[in-house]
Amino acid sequence: MLRLSSLVIPLGMSLFAQSPSVIPDRPIDRASRSQIGLDVAKAVSELYVYPDVGEQIAMFLREQVKDGAYDPMTSAKAFAKALTADLRSVNHDLHFEATYSVAAPDPPGPNTWNFGYVKAEVLSGNIGYLEVVAFLPRKLAQNAAAAAMMFLANTDALIIDLRANRGGAPDGVSFLCSYLFGDNPVHLNDLYWRNADRPVESWTDPKVPGGRYGPGKPVYVLTSRETFSGAEEFAYDVQQQKRAKIVGEPTGGGSHPGLVRYFSDDSGNQFRVFIPCGRAVNPISKKDWEGTGVIPDIRASPPDAQRTAQVDALRTLLANAIGNRKQALAVALAEFGQKE
Image 1 (cartoon, helix red, strand yellow):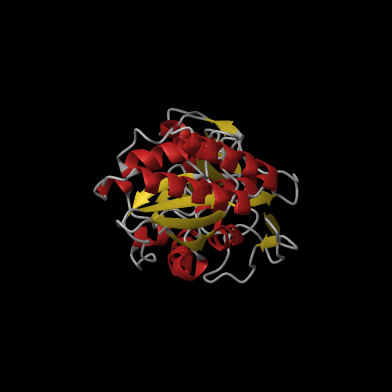
Image 2 (cartoon, one colour):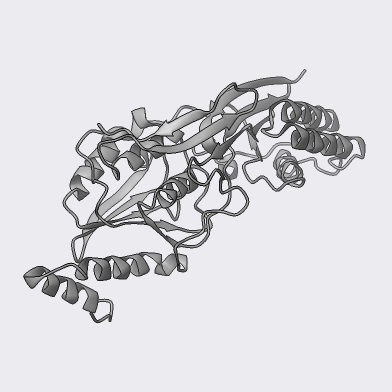
């Protein structure tokens, strides 16, 4: 008998799942493979954000089971890999993912990567640098975020590094965005969920703890092809609001939030399947970044992105500087082999 349960993890948050690389592989028999394949197909048909596409994907999975496509796979991990490829095969939605597991993941602990905020420092020229590797829910991350932003509050420009950020919770995204705007709430994004009557709106909070960075100082967001999901939303939101320059590579191209379903059999095999069941719509562009990624304002390879942003920030600050401040910025720019 197959059993399934669900866990809602908005915007593709998969950071708390067990790492497949450290879970011992186990055999899986034909009956379990077939039943899990059919149950996943049923869930996709019922939940995928676009019903017509969801049914196409479900039909393909059913055909794979009927044709015996999974029969050569006696490894649970190999089956999960094949299931992921088949889920993505129809419309290439990269939020689809099936992984082999042995139990539902525990909730995130208090020391998870310092809640995603792993580095804050002041660079030459009084430019702030903040590296965020995950957007955890606000209730978990707000103290770490507030401390980082308070530390960086007196810098003259800010670089936010999302090159290794694979996403997270929508309220974690809007919380950090809130530091970059002013007194009035700003409408950042809408999430449309399948079968919901209305979208879930995302707005900035003008009363974030520790004080805002504000709407006037230059901000840069570093991206790579690894930047995904909620991290892409952050970059897209501030880009559409013309609040920051995006520097780096086009991002991964995943804008569909969803939920996790667990499918298990009596032998102890369990599979974690993320099913996208919503879509993002930006209130300015009326679009999202699905498939295309967020296109940078300044293209740079991931290793060069920080340097590129620093040079642009120094030149921007230098354009309005006078006296000793101008001299200090010129010295900082010279460290990169650049002249005024």
